Figure 1 (cartoon, rainbow, N blue to C red):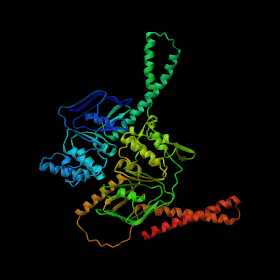
Figure 2 (cartoon, rainbow, N blue to C red; figure 1 turned 90 degrees about the vertical axis):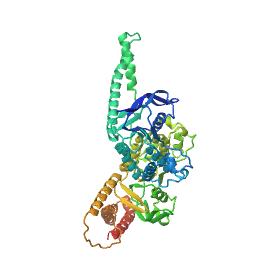
Figure 3 (cartoon, rainbow, N blue to C red; figure 1 turned 90 degrees about the horizontal axis):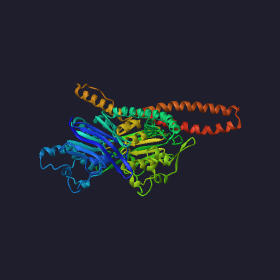
Figure 4 (tube, rainbow, N blue to C red; figure 1 turned 135 degrees about the vertical axis):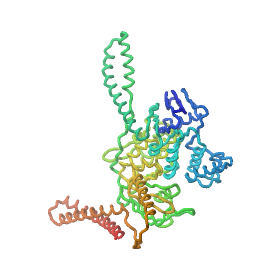
Length: 588
């Protein structure tokens, strides 16, 4: 394969901070390469160096002569006065290029080509920049977080576009489905060096674990031998012969290996004292519309205790508007949302928190609380929470202005969790977070004992976290689906396949019975079955209590305890019976 880019022994530092040291890798024609690293370790800096916008300390960067490079930046800048079409590329009136531009922009849901760039949102400008870099057809395409600000439909289109193309690609992204389906080589920037894995993301995960296990075994062997050699060093006299001096030099190299520390994954945080009542929130036939679009129309939903819901849909279908109504920031046009008294929301928004740049990282979190009570006598300090989300002790005492964009998002996440909410609402939480942090957040949410709503275009993240979806289809249409994103996609593909077969099949005369009644969803049917079991158990307990209270055999303490329990049990039984009746009326 023809080498497009060759990097040898590249080193980059900012003062005492070394981002990478003596790294080497190459990219050949036709390769699709994904670059993975933790926030703040130099991914974006490396891309800037390749584009000639950032200097470096030492090393060599060699591009193939006359190589045309195109780069998508995280925050592109445009002339606010120029039109979308002019911002895309200098089409010079060529009809074929204008047609291609329209096709790509339409896929990215940019339809008014004459609109000034200054009137577009940041997400729309990022999509125009993506169209621009695709249309200029560079030899080497460099993409920095290309899936940010794209909805699922756009992401899947771009995934297919790049997979089918023979274009050479270097990409930084946190979207693991995207990496898995597009990239054939993974570069991992870790501990100041580069590791190359010649396969997709699934292959990378397997081989990375092998590398870590081998390194851990090497350090363990070095530690065992180090103890023996250390004893020898202490016994030997200062005047040593040539052979002894050679052993002494080998000892210091062994000491260097033995004292290395692999970053161990933190223990999973499992809180046991998060309490949330049985009443969470109920959307009572709410409607919301703006002049150009309908968001919700007569929408009913009763949120269950401990539910982990994902919300997906195209941009502009109302996902964030729904969240803001739930949080009381917007009011519905009709209907109402009733939130339970025990609910404490923790809201992670797309906009994020505005920090005091001169404040230290640890102080930002301590201003909220010194610790979180995990229950059973366990407490988690502000410093321990930051450490769990990969802020080292040194980083915790850095000033906010030194943080990268991804590290700021991570700090914002810590401020939300430090408030110890029992209902987390996360609006696009995966944007700008590195993959290691996403894995930690996934584990945290899987173990979280409260309720969760996630609005996200990250399919991998959604599959890991949620067990139920609301799919916003636009103009007030919402699909209630009992499963994760992959299960929903499989279901829609099966449905589409069945519909296409039905269209081709000869039509048979079928008589229909018109029925306007709302049917129970799959989730409501399961709830009804569970209620029946719980009501039977509660009725049995009630009978036992009443028999015991009438039996005259109880001590004063037992009599008091059971007398307190009986009215609580009756309230719980009434509540569950009423809910069962509501569901049975729909079913009937």
